[in-house]
Image 1 (spheres, rainbow, N blue to C red):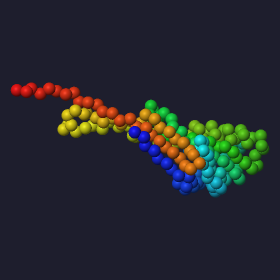
Image 2 (image 1 turned 90 degrees about the vertical axis):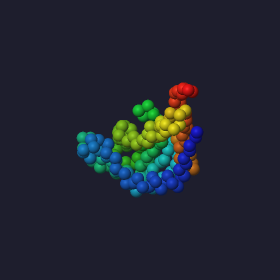
Image 3 (image 1 turned 135 degrees about the vertical axis):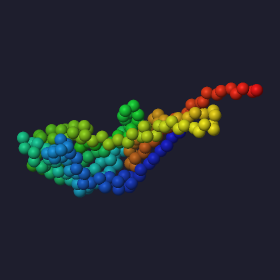
Image 4 (image 1 turned 45 degrees about the horizontal axis):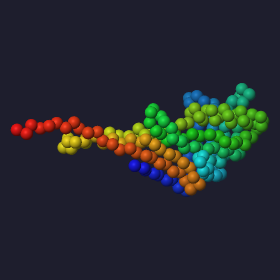
Length: 190
C-alpha cells in the first residue's frame, strides 16, 4: 500500500516563515556563549532535490581570537534538507540543517569558511529533528476472540521517500500488511 502526502510550495513557505526568529545554541545549552540567531527572512525557496533554503539576516556569537563577540550577517543562506534515515532500527524523516553561505561583517575573509565549517559541525551534532514514523505506523493489531482464524493484523513501513520538487515537498510511504493466524483446534464431533 502506498500513502503519499504533498505539501505545496505555498504551504511550506508559510510554515517556514513561522520559524523565524530562530535561535540555536551551538555550545553548552546552559550557557549562551555560542549561538546562531536567524531573523528577518528575505527569501524562502524550494531547491529541487535538496531542500528548503532560507535567506535571512543572522547574528552569530562565536569565539574569535579568544573573545566571544556577536557577528552580524547581513545575508545568510541556510538549507533545511529532509532525509529518510534509520533511527533505532526503524525509518524516520530527519531534517538536516546546513549553513550554505554567510556574508559576515567585521570578520576577516579568511575566517569566514572556518566559522561556517564550525557552525555546520555544531548544527549537524545538535539539530536532528526527526519524525519516527516507522515506529509510529508499524503496528500489530490484535483481533477479537470471535475471529477464530486470525490472531493479528500486522502493519509496517518498509520503504519511504522524501523529495523536494519545484512545486513542493513529497513524502511517500510504502506499508506492508500481513496477518498472523490462530492455531486451529479441532473440536470433538461427539
